[in-house]
Length: 277
Image (tube, rainbow, N blue to C red; front, side):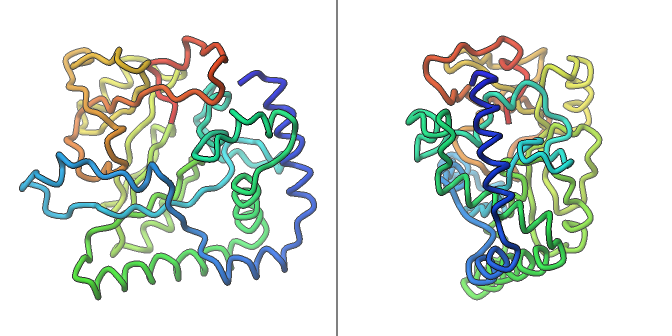
């Protein structure tokens, strides 16, 4: 995406955010869940289903879609470790072909984008209510899974688009499995939190190798069909077959195919092999 397009979108997002009313938004999410599922979260890797060594197969992933980076001009950076990836963030793509239809380039926000803004508005304006609703949503899904005899079959991804430090909250929910990608390389990891670190132009090969040696996985983006079988001696595994990171083999490079938001856009080399989340 070109920087002028990003600025146009940001201006429209800030205008919409400033038009919101806390009472209306609070009522919306009291009535509707904060969590949702998208096409990526619903993907299941069939090869994992055949792996008998996997005890707790994750077949359902529910995510929290907030606004990334500093797009709302509220003095908050929702992606503290981000770099140039913002210009190609998946926040601007998806099944509605948000950018391919050029609606956002013209400053016209889609319903999907607006709902992400409203979730973020509630997070910023009333965190007490936000976390009460979030906890109710998660526990309801856990209770249903228990009733169906599938207690360990789902995971929660709180940073589908963002990269917020939710670890204190995750620590308070030890009965729930959480997972995320993160470009914050010193992010703490409670026992119930699986983190795949996203590489970027801001980290060195040495930092990546150290993470891998510690038994972590590091996501790296390649143009489709160009990923090697190994990277500096570490195995490469696909991250596009499913969004279940909990059951990945550890100490690996997680290969993600490059997804562009605009077909004709030139992709800067800094994006490639350095982890667009």
